Length: 139
Image 1 (cartoon, rainbow, N blue to C red):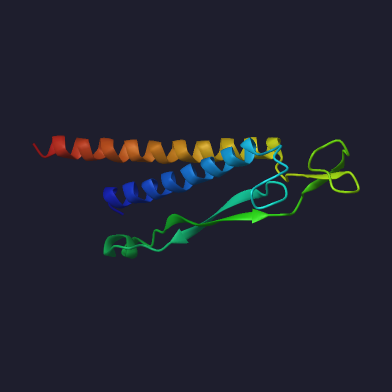
Image 2 (cartoon, rainbow, N blue to C red):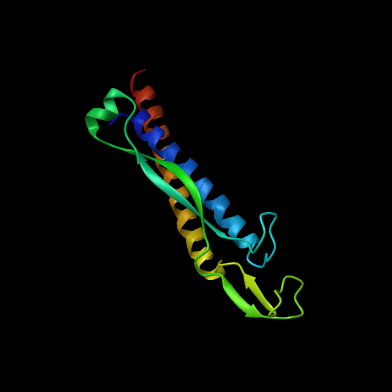
C-alpha cells in the first residue's frame, strides 16, 4: 500500500468518525425532546458504516478497503413512556413518550468515536512525516 492510499483511507475514516460525532452530539442535545417537527419524541439516530472497495489499482492489488457512511438511521426501539399528566405533551391518559437516548451509552459512543478520530489523525501525521523524510533523503 502506498502512503497516499493510507492517507486516503485515514481521511475516509476521519470523515466517518466526524459524522458519528455529529450524530452523537445531536442525540445528546435531544435527550429531553418530547416534541419534534415530525411529531412525537426525538428518535435516536445511528450512523451506519460500510466498507468501500478500492478505487485505484494500487489499493486494489493490496486488497485494502476503506470506510464510508452508508446512511443515518432512526429507531423507535426503547421509547420510554412515563406518566406525567401535567406535561404539555401528555396524551389523554397522561402518558408522555420520552426519547430513546441513553446519555451514558451516548457518552461511551462519543469516547469511542473520538478515539477512532484521534487514531486516524495519528496515521495521517505519521504518513506525512514519512513523506517529508523521503523528500529529505532524495536531496
